[in-house]
Image (cartoon, rainbow, N blue to C red):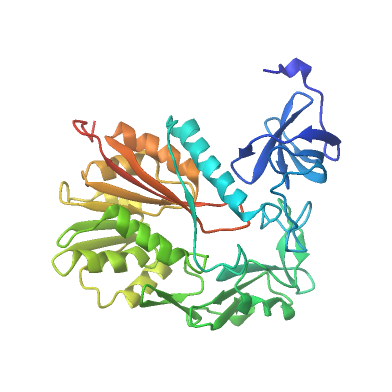
Length: 407
């Protein structure tokens, strides 16, 4: 290990030549130079590159690969003209072959469980999600930033500066014409394309968006969703995740399930069919807008009980001890933490199905659940965000035999 006394000060703008090591969580790759660990974007493991330092902190140095000296066989020409050092911050991996992108994501998930859950033997496959075109044209919803002249674009990486963009290649093709208009005086524009092909555009100047709704079809069922409500971005992600939840959780007729952080009720709609008229699904969500959407879309699912509440607050008052068969968790990126994990374990469900958009938060929560008597059982990944470092992971937690869950 290099001591701090051997470190050579680095400054923004410094140019160095380094060899790129393993991938790190967040779309960076590791390099070492002058006694510091450097997190490099736009590189690939094994490459020799020239980097330019973009940020220096006491515990973090960031850099961009500005010239590739020895190229990886997995390097490809980025399809988008707006990606690269100093450009749009949205896509981290456009320079990497799609199969290698997924391999890197698998490694990130495994590393997360090794570092944060103490599990060294976790095997996970990151599956492709049907609907994209070689990693492009998949994003059904886009939040565009607007510059001072009214033109649409996206923020440069870790910058408040907006890069004007005339097309986004990861957006569904129907949204390609959105940047052709200008929006003076507007800070943000949202566009969404439904399964029916209809394009919905919302901006601050248009007033309320309560009537700006998008139709999404999932497994033969239509969902009518407010453009500002959360919905999975990838055109095929909702179906893939619903199938995973049902396959891994295996809900049975007559069972009681909790759908926590239920959003617009996506998982609840299919859980209700699985548990049947004698079962019960309790959907808990803190967003009033999302609960309104759930009420609209689940009005005929009489076995679904919708609860508008903070999840932790609701769990603290839950009285169904021992009656809950399964729990679906789809929390924010930060995960659930110790209090909520303990409250869920106290109900002694036979399975917890955890849907995560951050593998580190998931791994931390898995370690917490272990202390309350639940272990990791199965895990699978989905490439729901091609061309970026993001990965969706679905895991199941099951009781550890003989463990006191509430100790």
